[in-house]
Image 1: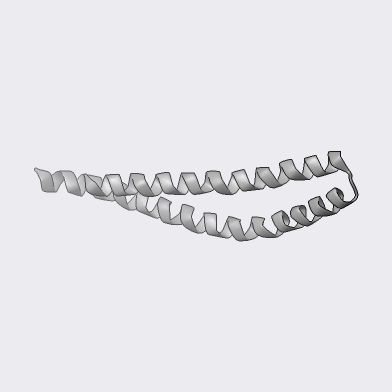
Image 2 (image 1 turned 90 degrees about the horizontal axis):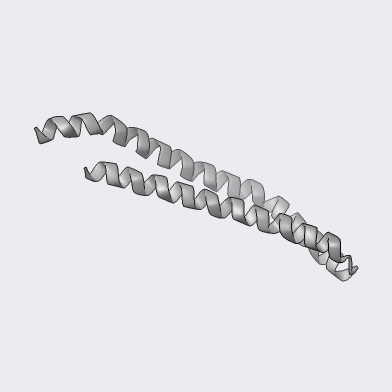
Length: 91
C-alpha cells in the first residue's frame, strides 16, 4: 500500500521539484537583471544627496527599497517552493 501511495505522489514531487528549480533560476536571473538598475538608482541617489534634492532622494530611496523587497520576496517564494518539494518528497 505504501508503494502505491509513493507512485501516486511521485508526479506531484516531480512537478514541485521542477517548480522549485525554475524559481531558483528565475531568482538568480532577476537578481542579475535588477542589479544594474539598483546600482544606477544608488548612484543617482548619491548625486541627489550631494545636490540636496531631498524629495528626489526620497523617491530614489523608495525605488531602491522596492527593488530590494522584490528580490527578498522572490527568495522567500523560492525557499517556500523548495521546502514544499522536500515535504512532498518526504511523504
